[in-house]
Image (cartoon, rainbow, N blue to C red; front, side, top):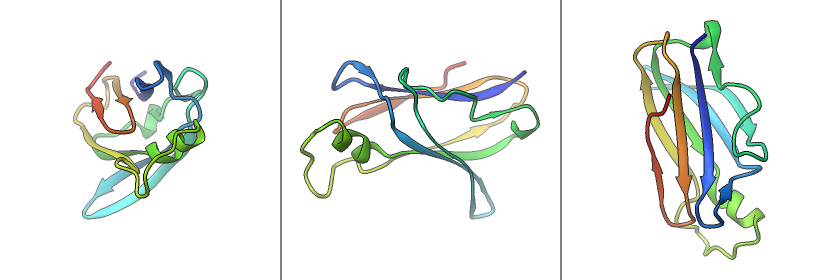
Length: 117
């Protein structure tokens, strides 16, 4: 069964980003519909896919990661405002029968993502 998943790696500390808050939105006609709000587990993942089964549909989506909140909770002294308060990744699902994996690799000052499977 096709699914959408994510994984967050904190390359500043060299470990998975445990406890990072994120939100998934479906984007359509200038509107944003919140589908899920969750926190990552000890492995930097969610305990269940973001989407799967009937909820896995073609369209535009947005994953928003609460980066500054996470780094402050780790005891980092970030400036106010933080350089990366949120990391928002907008992406498309063109084929809902395939797996889509949207990993986030970040530090307080940079991030990278790619389409995994």
